[in-house]
Image (cartoon, rainbow, N blue to C red):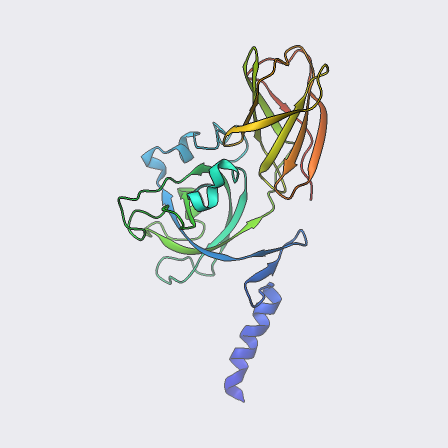
Length: 263
């Protein structure tokens, strides 16, 4: 009987921490998300990499200007979804390695801002970590060091999608030309990612925009000298309409702030 007490105490700790058998955990927004097993590596800040110098396949540019900071990650093609996952937030922790994982299995939340390209010339477990169908996160050094030691090469992680916490509203950066409009959407809370976008001028109806790359959306229309309204659809299918986000005298390369996605 005495030998069973440690096991009972361990199970009690699991229940208190919110862990449930079967891999499900209850999130703060009331939904459920499954922990999945994947792998993670990191890019050293000294190497000069899109994740560190403000580039990346999502098109966000300077990550500090666009409020994503240093806790970001590239995703393998199995997760990236040809750019649809840009802006998504993931919580992860290092597992199954006493040598490299930090004590206590702390977690970190990162934002998807880049693509980790496959390398089919290397084995999946030695350099080809982003080969399909592997679910791999190539993190910034700052984010990786929150869960594992710097000496680690590749570690196994548990990860899950979580709601994004952002300050302020969604931001719309307008570029393009006389008959071509492109809009970059950043600072998206809740779902994190945008799956559909429409734009409306004061003299037009709603015009669907197509994904150009990452979170850059485009349409072939001349909307200059018209206030711009946007209809944004998040990953969960919820649509939010924002009227007159940009005034009639907007100019290319300007950024405007609208409402925010809410749970």
